[in-house]
Length: 242
Image 1 (spheres, one colour):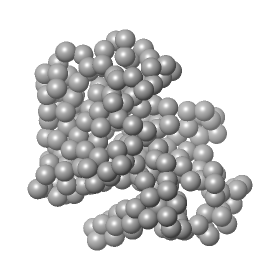
Image 2 (spheres, helix red, strand yellow; image 1 turned 45 degrees about the vertical axis):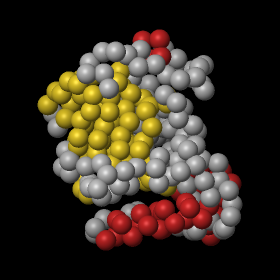
Image 3 (tube, rainbow, N blue to C red; image 1 turned 180 degrees about the vertical axis):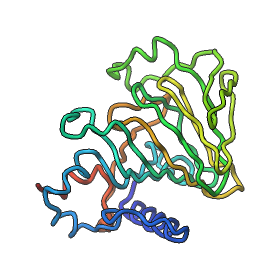
């Protein structure tokens, strides 16, 4: 992805949230000078990957396949004594017609909550037992495998079962709980508008806990065609010095 594209997406997201009276925390607005001046008191932001997370999943076409994320809070798999928080919270913005590729998590359980805007169509499969055992990512680059079994999820506290490849629609105000091993893809239903989702989950590490079916990389490679106005969490190592 180009840096200019990331800058524009973040600026548009900030305006989208402000227009709805939902301000973000101060570090969401920091530019490079603020990040370079950040002291060790901000260590949790960096170590727990808080902040902006923009990806096109290696598609090269963010408008078609992509996701805008802002992580408010998160625990840490590797430093549980230092960061004992067992939960995470994220903003997820899905464009009209935008797709999230098929994937599941080995560890994370998540509630996806439609807080407003358009409708979200979620398609579901269970993974196979063999696929789920690949916890070290030993078959990275190889397609995942769908099980031909019904999928049961909780929608606002009610169990809903769909056949393999079945779909549910989340309208504004509705939520779904997705468990480890449940493949899911979603699309903002075309014509219904941008979808504002919030995710509440167990703590997670997006660098190791995503099993994609066929998608490309989770963290984008950035073409620096202009100066960074904001940072995504993958930038912290290059700009923040504690």
